[in-house]
Length: 321
Ligand code: SN0
Image (cartoon, helix red, strand yellow):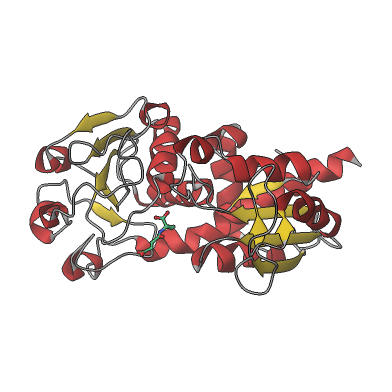
């Protein structure tokens, strides 16, 4: 693997899982693999788990790590094509990317959907520019349409906690005060289908996701019906995908919040969320503070997922020399 932007890049999921479990047992087994190599982690958006877990994962492999927040200290970056650069953005991505490529052996990029153009977001214009112009392997730290490191960590977590070979996994929309990207939901759906789980997605009418990600999942509009017999409840808010309301909030219906009463409909399901989570909007305190909540093990597995990905890329780089 050279670039990691979706489940499609990782190859066999069984091998990926085996690698993750090995890493978990002994995180320092390959502590010299990345020696004298540099990972640059670039953030256009905020991050807690992704920056900490990815930095730690790269360091476990012996890499040097540079973390850069574009909004704090770097030149404001112009991303549009063919513009007269007379605004407040002194540097163009077209120079910034190859410059970063000079200093880094692997580049991680976080660049959320901007909701200015569905086409630009769903063509992954920013992420693809890094792949095209940096000359270096690129890892998605959440792009416009996917958050694959999160999905990989979610997969590891479900494997660790599942009580049957093919658990019923339910992705439920939940209310939120802001318009959030579809990336986590898209990526989770795509990854869960690839993992062979029984996936149901439930959301209010109008919140349909792009079918390229949900193909293979069951869509159920009645949340209670969806929850019946579930083994894992994965809550997430996202803004509308469909035109003409792309990126808009259609509902803040609080009856979609995950609470204990709804969890009682499940087969003793675990509760999952990628974090950060809005308490008493997405999920009640009682569910989040209960033993059913897996949000901390999920976060812990972010380090393992990132390390498995970085290790695979380093192995590919070493083979090339
Ligand atoms: C991001 C999202 O894609 O939904 C990152 C999740 C890993 N979440 C947020 O931006 C939440 C911000 C908020 O206001 O709650």
